[in-house]
Image 1: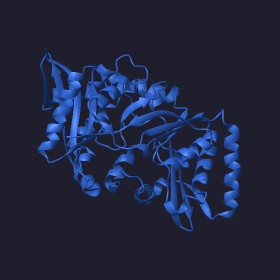
Image 2: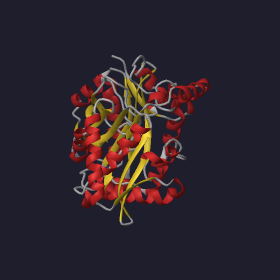
Image 3: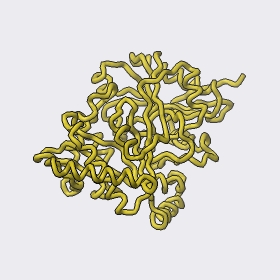
Length: 377
């Protein structure tokens, strides 16, 4: 029987093996969107990664017969654990070939790391960011994932459940709407929104990029209050939110980043971004210098035709006032006017049914599902 050894990443060469290992797992998978290596290097760098401002992480490679066969990251996020009253070890960058003994060795190494720090549960997978590559893909392998959404082979779910991992919360889903096929429902949304505007004092406005810091403050407030009802809501530190949003500032159209204001108070937020995964799927994670040339070519000649929405935030006291409908209808109108043909809404949780119901009422359908897991250790 081959011996498996799981060792921490200690050198630049091992870091490169760790970061490029997914290319072994997903070789030949037409739905996989390679992660951007320059960004991944930043994420795992203790000097540059935002996670390390609040937590500790270590990265491991599983070796079998002298060859890398899997990777995992074990991390602790003390502020989040204090807020939840938990002792969880976050795990992520969890990639492995279809060898269950390698999978078990990686899990056991992460569990040992966690126990050494007084932690009692593995929670994930997440890649050091609760919004990045969320969970294990349960179903939806007929089209590539949208921006920031994960992808995994079918055996990942099988191995997780075989090992004793249990769902940590309701599944998260991506919904999609073909804007050309549901024009009747969309037009009906426009009519409802117009009637609501006549009775409400709500103003739908563009994001003001010239007042970026003030807009970050508004989004931060909405995140803390609009999602507080979710059982595993962890909240955002403002600096982490600012760092997360900064790259999107360069690609976002302010006319598609919408706020709802009522008597001078911001009560809702609905942003849409170009689904850059339509381009990134072709540029190999910018692994080599010539991949940057591919990126430029695709962005010029084949820009994204899909928009993706990552969050709709409405303060709880305005949930039944039509604010969400007005935001959604205005966004659909603007997306259609700009020539986009498909809208992705991801990722939202099934334990947040209002967003799912609103989208389904306008023709959206669930096309992907992911699961995050717990494992008591």
